[in-house]
Image 1: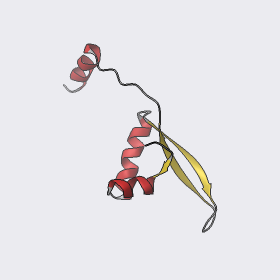
Image 2: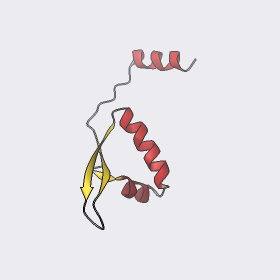
Image 3: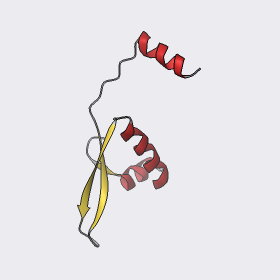
Image 4: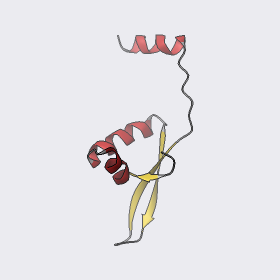
Length: 74
């Protein structure tokens, strides 16, 4: 994602149910890969919506990481 996006827009662009998009975004947020913030929408009546953005991150796969993954999967 290049810009902050609402769950509904993500679900629509991926052609998946809202609940499934929400579940995946929650996992990604807990992993620190995306960040969610609340914004106030004024129309049709004032309410909160959560907008998500991808956080900057770097994934390094090395021997140590692969060994840790192997240990966890036992």
